[in-house]
Length: 310
Image (cartoon, rainbow, N blue to C red; front, side, top):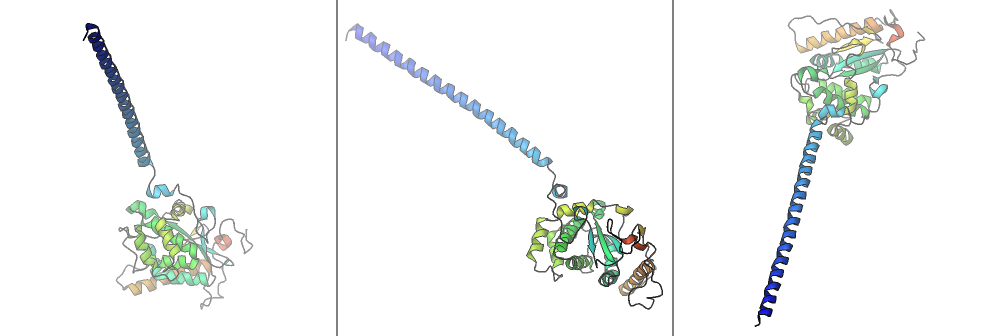
């Protein structure tokens, strides 16, 4: 082989080596660029993930979130945000206001002793009742049973006023009402267990769904915001117009539960008779046809006074 051919082969070999090196350099450069880009994307994704996690952590939860939820008001309510629960004969000339908290032991004691007397007066058209449901015990004792039970009461009211009254009575009953220090009604399962004792609610799927989904949670928060209305900050409280009614106290002495209930109901009737006059069919009916010391002021705000009083 001539020296000229040998030199040409060497030159060609060097060119091939140089070309291969250039190709490898370009490949390595591309790899580094892709790695760097991937790292940037990873950092951005991590930052985005952290930002999303922080955002979710700062979002309101539970009953705070309920304040921002869509407002769904139960049927058979009226007034601003459906916060007026007015039950009874529309032709009744007077309105008794009752303030309660579902976890309140004194409210339970009232319902157990005098709930039937109150219902009879409503049925007889003696007066209508506006119920204002508070939830302050959740704040004082911790938990969410008052709010959760109120939301469930909204689901019952959506079915009918009768379902609302019977469910409220069941929630306050000796069978179901818990110690106020126990947040039993914070569990939907417990609220549904109580509803099983109410014929109107026992097998009602719409009611059960509303309780589980918290359909009336926002409405319950609107009711909660009424705390302090007319200066009332304790339960149970009874008002006729702007007048707070005072119920005689049951003597502090040893007695059976039956005796206590009898005395408590007698005191409730005494308070009502003093304010609204004797009940229909009572021995004293006709002796005092008074409308009560507050006269026509017991009507709902903004409603025309059917007595004609100003």
